[in-house]
Amino acid sequence: MITASIVIPRRFNGPPHSGNGGYVCGRIAQYLSGPVKVRLRMPPPLEQELRVEASDDEAQLFDGNRLIAEAQRVDFRIDPPATPTFAQANVASKGYVGFTRHLLPTCFVCGPQRAEGDGMRIFPGPTAYDAVLAAPWTPHESLADGSGRVPPEFLWAALDCAGAFAIMPPEDKLILLGELCARLDGAVEVGERCVVVAWPLGGEGRKRLAGTAILSASGAPVAMARATWIEIPADRSDSSGNDGSA
Image 1 (cartoon, rainbow, N blue to C red):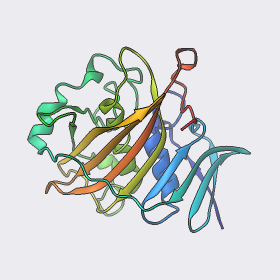
Image 2 (cartoon, rainbow, N blue to C red):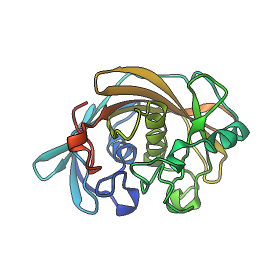
Image 3 (cartoon, rainbow, N blue to C red):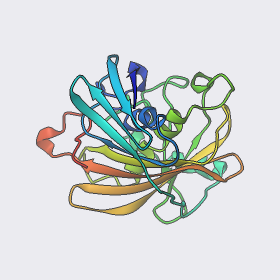
């Protein structure tokens, strides 16, 4: 058993007062090898020490005695139904619905109010491929590790929000990430011209499923994910964090 402490910096928020779900999932997943499924139980708090407890196959994240998230190794693979080019993704992003309607405009990953070099600014829009969204993503140097590559937690973050826009409910209903299952098959360099792809996978009740993938500059998938998103009832839609009922 490994016990460690982590802190979610305020820069990496999703809702205003809690961590971006994909980023937090990636922080937990680093304690396990291979594809990992992470379920978020409570909003991950910002700027405070959290405890990780991990074994070979499972990991848990705690705020004191409160379980924030739990992760486990899984056998997982999913392939995107289409692989738009960087140029096609550039065109698609101009139709990003978040430019005109966004319930979390300061989100680290998809918030249009985050400046270049601060947020990831992944803005997926519709492509010519049926129900497939795409966004260009050129990782900023502020995301680099010591070797000039993008750390895994930011790949997890990139796999997060685009899926929400692929299954966005009508009107102004809030959806939050409940579970993210991801597989990382390669690395991404800072400054590399990548494409983030998202597509719907169905749903039931308040749950909506989406697939996402990151395409490298060569067009090959280097990371892929399946997400479960939870539609939040109006009387609980305070944008404070994850519903935890996935």
